Image (cartoon, rainbow, N blue to C red; front, side):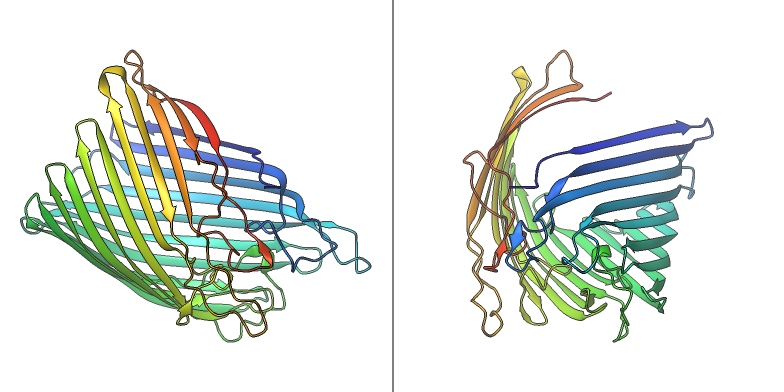
Length: 448
């Protein structure tokens, strides 16, 4: 696949100090850099709708940095168990734009910078039946496009307060519930300002119907998330934000049962998410609201023995946008068609030799729950079925328990496929990206 070679350099460093008083501070910094030829559109190889004078592959530069400060008190005396986190992160992406011949320079660089400063202060209150965490948090996010002709910037600031309880009030019962309040200030590319506030809440629990054998689980949450920032590269200084953007909200539900017996496990769950006012931005329009529904169920079974396990899981998920089956274009910022996925994993450790052998298989049947194509266009193509087999061997020498030598073979049978989360498979005018073919990976890990 042209434009997919590796050229990534990443690093993570952390330093921490704990005082005699129990106060502990940590600093960490992560840096990721990538500079290489990439497809013009990162989610596809090419499309018939591309501008003919533009190269399909062009240089991209990515520079991402994250710095985090954390304070905790390790003494855990009484009800005082504080945590303070402050973080600052930036993502800088640059590439080359090729205007239509005769309309400007042959090419020029375009750059986007996304930055976030965020933090929280919370305290965990320990009680005889569990913990209660209360705190405040904030973020200040900025998405900026540095373009020769149409620069643009969106900003969002938010402050919130929250409380969350995790309790075991009765035998065989575990509960988690809480809520939060948020105030957001959103600024559009033309300086338009929108202030919104909202409430979120959640409750979930587990109850052992038959102790050590059968457990029931259920949960519900309402999430208020404000107005999300748009993708930098499509921002337009001429946006009018009409109709007025509304905060995105969602309601989420799940119910399930899990049984265990002599190493055997069997569990199943059903789940659903309903989103309202989900923002769908395009260059021509700052804001279009959609309703998104995602629902499905999963069934899993497994068996564990002293030195190994085998597990199988089946998931079936349907996604709708405004009541119609989702496609990967309308769902670019909202949801991805998934369908059915079957996974099988297994591993066994030969303890006397420090050797573990394992593998997994993923199978996705053909997916054809797609909307009708617009009038005059070809019918959408179903997503093709695929199966991928991976295996690994891992060795931990008895004399050096901190070392792990691992060899992986990914996609053993060299399957040519795009997983069902890949953009554009249903459109005849798009050449979708394929997943990697057969790959060999050898790694050595040392912990200290």
